[in-house]
Image 1: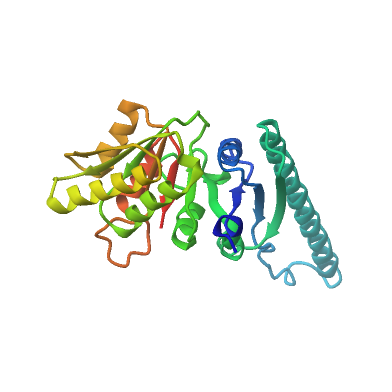
Image 2: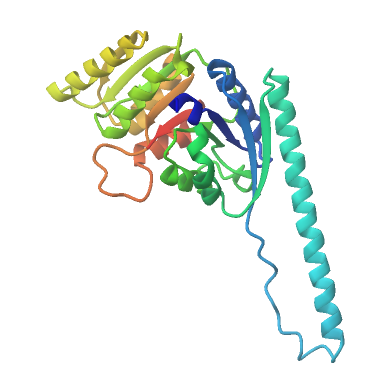
Length: 289
């Protein structure tokens, strides 16, 4: 079966946070350029009831049973309200994507762990979209959402981390360090219709070595074979600061990079450069595992 059919769905995770609208607009933008359907998913965490308290010492016999029944009823009402809110989040998200001109939209309300949900459905996805921070972290600007790191670690598909607001994307910065994930990022760009007609620049931060020069030339040749005329360059400095500065100074609309650096040794967290780029960049970042 054709791989483009198997991995054709755009999965967008929405949670009602200030990033959800941006996630929807980015999903619609990708759908227009790739002719792929959009699936909007809202995940309700596993239901954990309130902590049980031993009330028998302070409440007489019979009253405790009645109180526990009332608490159980309140818990059921709360679960129902959470489900109603989840459906409302999906309805709002669907309206945004529809207003952007996309007609092939599905919605799904799921219960359970968000990473387990993604693991179970990502085989049908071409890309997974998530906001930089979730609803509970809107004001914790120095920290990434915990679900983001977990999803990036677990996902085998590209993960697009949406910026706070959608802006038209015309140019792409590819962070290249010679590692397998950065090579995978270049290959993905070459194969995906998403990047057709976009200005692509492949950048390495550090010293120019024969291996780096060859890697950049190989990347340029691969992209050229796909019809993409890419610029390549090497800049001095630290990746954490220079890449972000380049994005800001030259107005790149998107960053594509490997989730892990070339030198990582079986790390269970995303690379330090990746974390800093996602944290500080005001443009969407596509992460390749």
